[in-house]
Length: 442
Ligand code: 9PG
Image (tube, rainbow, N blue to C red; front, side, top):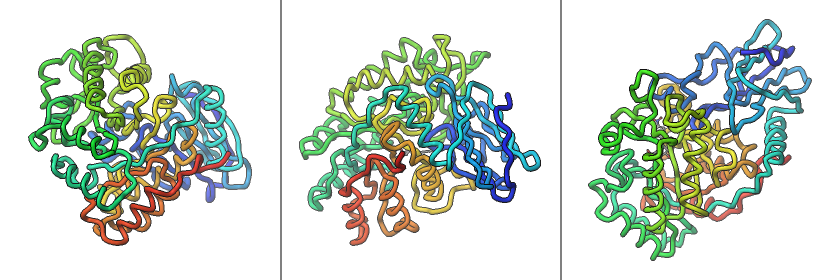
């Protein structure tokens, strides 16, 4: 770590703003005496934070972006990755008396501005201009199976919602089948027991006049999958030869696909070209932090290079299909996606699980949706996560207001038969209202 700025502050009023590594990593501003949101247990440390250097609550810590508002009316300082597409330095801020000392472990730029939001926005504007990035394509509206059915989703759940969205005349472009259609994490072309005919379902979606969307976690391989059993050579390894953990979920250990391995790359090509042949043109690619986990790969490239090469391969295969990232390292994703989840998951409960703000909750989802508003319209379309408006959702009016203010991608994720009058009217309104080009003006 090298000191890059020493900032005189009013300790009672100053704030440090952290941006986290990936979609679910908490990102927000803190008073100097506040404890920043951090991981609670190791599996989620891997799956929601930048594992290799995620910190405790004793220092402030941003991944590629950290800002200090001195609280005395003088300018805000932003410390930012100099080349965020290739290197994302960790940036640390420590309080030393009435100073905040900022240090970084890589190349950064130091800028000043009038507010944290202005600093982030102007930095993003300059980056977009220097990269020559085109404006993102507007997002289609979607219906997503996850937040009602979770992994228990069945083929007939999707069919019944498909019928109901027609009866209710809801403006839904894409029906996106989430986690649950597949036999295992990593076995994307083998159906789970609850789906008799996956390509047939996508055909029915399309013959109903909707577009077909699918969820994958393309860079994860779970311990119980056939892919894990038959292709151990496709995994990212540690120097002792054991596969590197990519977290724990679905009651099993998870590993990371080596996106530089030729066999693994052929497999990714086969999966996504099969989806394309099924008429799918909307992809929610999830848990993709896995491709950027440090470890030994077939090719000697950096984790971020491996990540970008894996995503670029998917983009090559799916062509102009709409690509949404989730569980995605934010800065390394710039220029690769149409839309990006910028937050942890919404949930029926307001408060975050176990005190970990990266876990599903309205609290965590709102926190990130606000602090990443500057990205929308610049790097991609922001996905704040789906609208859920059924009566069981705690403080549903607040969530609807958040989506209306910060939602670039608009999706509904209730069982449509669960909606009461307010829920249906709200869903219809959020799917219909125009989305502004920017949430934060330059
Ligand atoms: C499908 C879901 C949905 C959802 C995604 C993602 O840390 N965790 O254990 C954790 C589990 C699930 C999760 C996020 C974090 O949700 O964001 O929209 O697609 O996967 O499994």
